[in-house]
Length: 294
Image (cartoon, rainbow, N blue to C red; front, top):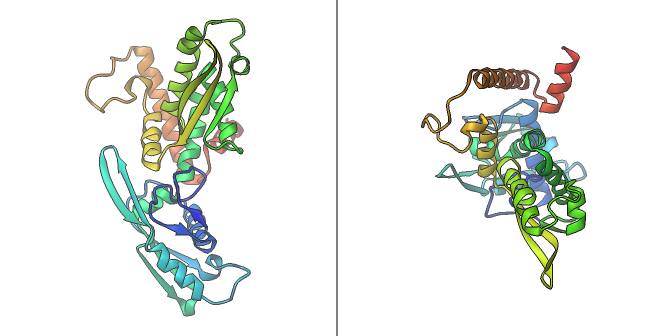
């Protein structure tokens, strides 16, 4: 059985109380597919009734009736979602109501807003990954790419790099031969950027032999859905306003050039949002479409 845990590669990252069966996961995949087909955004503010052919939610190799489907739906009504979003606690269920209509051939499922956000979480994480790939600079981008590769392979929560390999990875060469300087000017700023823009929270632990530093261990954990939503919102903001309350006057005044650039960023973002709403694709597809129609 699979646990519903905090992972960007699984559905319902905020569920806390349920062990699910493959059949239940199949139902969730069917729900996710229907939300995709209807282009329902992750920030949808209302509960949504879905009408899905019952056979799509059943095991194709199983019995041709709804006995086990009804059991799965009843169990899904018991999944509890919990979280804390910008200081406000919340709780919900994954499935609020279900009906089998048209002689049992159609399943009508009522999905609450919080459940829609959770089911759509992989798209939220993917969007943050794309943002990080473009926003991160130099050392941070190289390190993020390396860690992303590791976390998608067998190393799910940590990896240790020998110091020489890490220097080569970050293209440092002979610069910063002292560990203190390398850590201060290269490694720590790169990790801080990744934690600010990316999908994982990364920490480092240097390893020593005697008095010399010989490697660095990286530990990471997936951001929870609510943390990812905050990161997503912050990634949309101007760099001067990141992590600052809206309208508090703490961001420095913009020069004319910066104001023009901010207007262009806003226009580009609005164009991307409008295209996404109309076409339902991802950012990479939008860029390809934009090039083709330039």
